[in-house]
Amino acid sequence: MKKYFMISIFCILIMLCACGKKTEQIAIIETPNDNQITIYRPGPNGIIADDELYQVKQPDSLSAAVEETMAAFTAVPYGSEYDSVVYHTYMLDVDNNLSLDFFAKQIPDTKTSLLANGALCQTLFQLSDLQNITIRILAENEEVIMENTFTRDSFYFYGNEDEHVNIRQLTIYYPNKEGNALARGTVKVRQEKDKTIEEQIVSVLASRGVIPSNTTVNTIYCSSGVCYIDFGKTFMEGFPSTEGKLIIYSLVNSITEINGIDALYILVNGEPISNYHGFDDMNKALSFDGTIVK
Image 1 (spheres, rainbow, N blue to C red):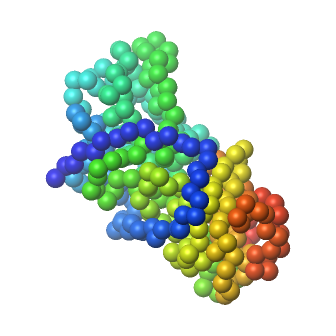
Image 2 (tube, helix red, strand yellow):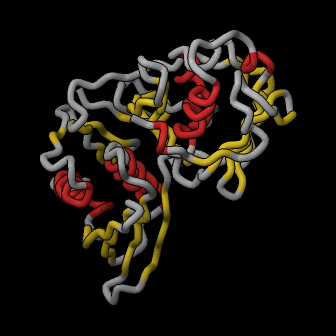
Image 3 (spheres, rainbow, N blue to C red):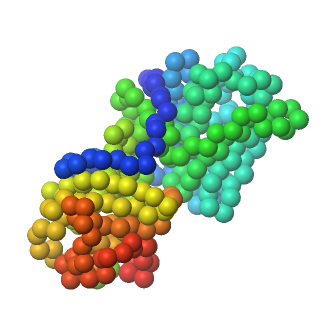
């Protein structure tokens, strides 16, 4: 059965204070085929999820995947309020930022735009390598009359029971079985309205035993490409079997995979730390290190 979901714009906060909040176990969502996506469509009061999953035929080419997904998205008429809006073309830059152009005889009303943009973004952001999406509405003379850029966090979908809604795919790094390097993997988590992506990564690593399971996050603050995470003292407890450098870079490499974050600075109870279980290069912001990934 098709389901309707109400949506609202999700404000992006510069700082999230979550003092003393214990990391929660994140439910990992498994899908039988990562190349299958759900096509969402604007409806009269929300967005509609197609009953059948769409099989992406060229998943190894992001450009081709975008093109065929847009063909599937635009294949069905959505009602008279959308008749004046016609999909024109797309452009994908070297950083995998997508720009979509639509021709329109008039500017769509707020509700129509919100539902269409929400359905389109929720559909396309299932393509894991896609970064930001810019949607432009053009007049017949190609003058831009409306332009909006959306991230994966721009929409939050309320009141849903569909397991495919509010799902975010994350790249994480964790110590391999030998304990001498980091392995790379992906997990799908359910996006939470009151939890940042950085917190979700911490929760995933805690649930996998990479960092102490009772780790608490005091504050997360991101500025000028640097993410500052202030952990509670439980972050320092225990005697891990993995060397401290791999634990730290599990966090660093995972969090710097987030678009716009280039480095991670770790604090404990508001203070820098000089050493983490033998790793003594902690008094600075740390950037992604691919040399320890196998």
